[in-house]
Image: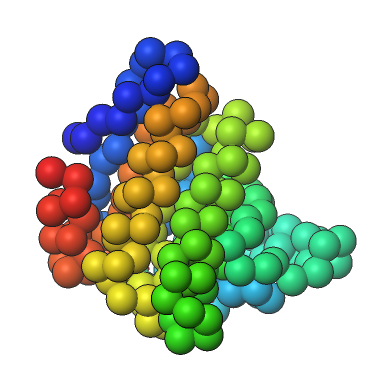
Length: 183
Ligand code: AR6
């Protein structure tokens, strides 16, 4: 376990690194690496919709009707359906190569920041993240890990609400990268 100091409250928010399947995590919210349509897909998005059941897609459809597509870097929230988590926060990572590397970093950091902000707004205290954009969207894994850890640590350093963040690494390469960064 790795810890970040909360400067405002003087309490510690913990960062945990876990190798495994995010759909099995018992946390207040798991984050989904979705696409702008919010209509599901492959990778972790497919796994979350399969494990959570149709209630997630129903809520995604309602969000689409009300708000349209989800822009890159933004986040929305639904039920977690049948999964142990209480909520799913759906965020849309950048597709590597669609903008400059620097802009991609900023958009990816926005995914982590906006997901945590949404969690705070809903009173959710523990959040598990997958390695957003590092699958189908092709973001270089090491670069994405640096952005993810930096964005989460910076967020936790100036807030009092989130108590625990888990990085869920599905593949060994990502796990090793995060271990190096957090160790
Ligand atoms: N638990 C945790 N991580 C997982 C799981 C799981 N069950 N399954 C895969 N991963 P990706 P992206 C990891 O492709 O790159 C979808 O079709 C995987 O090893 O799921 O953001 C969406 O609908 C990788 O490290 O998401 C979008 O169209 C990470 O999750 C598009 O893919 C992200 O890989 C989003 O692409």
